[in-house]
Length: 223
Length: 252
Image (tube, rainbow over all chains, first blue to last red; front, side, top):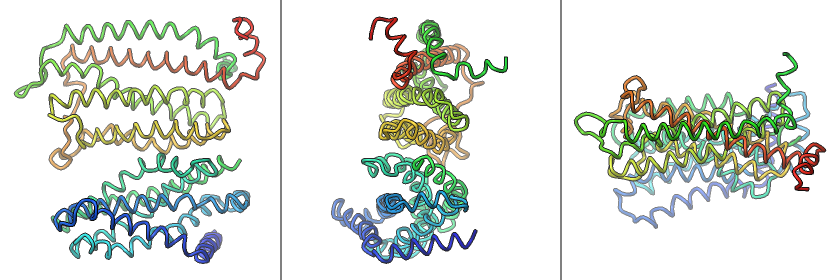
């Protein structure tokens, strides 16, 4: 079981690293969106400090959603996905491996670049630390929930726009508590704990149910 | 008896039954709405609440609250039919879920719209990011997502099953909406909606609200069955019984 997981994970990572631009596009999309806001709303320090957490989270939501289309598309087109569905291994495990690879390539870079983005918005060190923690807990949830939508819209015309309509409403709780944690850190660091605990709870729930739901969705899309 | 359970699961036998039920539901809708609205407008107190009372405009409650209840209830019903369809593979249950979605979306919109009109005189604003408003808006998006996904897939079987799965995933939102009012600490949640409790409502108001709710419920039955009948005809148009029916009506 674990070997299959590693096998799919390493395969997806190798494939993605051979085409690095895909990974970098997501990252640069995130950076560009975040950098656009100060140009639009003005560069005053106080405004940016208030806007910062929300902007970073919305940008992370959009970046992770843009990358979702590629999660199953390539494997669907060349028939690999059908073979995966036919294997004796549980499909949800294979899907979880694919989601993990997807998060390592699109979610983790966002977490690592967050301090830089935080400095653009004059966030304090504490706020940046909390933002990284919240992103670390929250971005996997985005990948997990998004995988359900990606599986449902597989191979449809206009799949990308449809995907955003299906998935963004489900992202809202992560957005609210993710941005809330960073805002709360400006008042008292101890106040951030419930937010992080809730994000952790979302992560555990998504880890449990999302692979099952996405594998069911894949079976519907492929049959 | 055992064989009767699935008799009406066949679209061909449910179609005439639905046709006979629709007028009954329309009559019930009319009676309940008239009774509820008459009682609500003329037999209830002129103001609501204690020290800072809401005057006549509180009567929006007789549309607003039933619409909000129905918006959540219809989502649950839709998910139940979708789940039955996924488990038993019955075509009619998917059609049922599909027929409920537009009515549910309309009630969600109605709840948001009447809420805005109520919010203006009582809160001084058409819209605020109160938890219940936000979650009701998300529910509206869920209905739209369900309809959009279903209409984006050409293959009916895949469309039914994919949209059903999406509806089931979206079910997590309904308890959130329901409990978003009864937040543990009102100071922290900044909820504009007051806590509600059926036992504390004045009798006449409660009666009108329940009558209108029942009317809306019957309305949902009537419109859903009408929509269901046209979905059945569209999907089964290749079958002989539909052809015979059309010939009998002189429309083919």
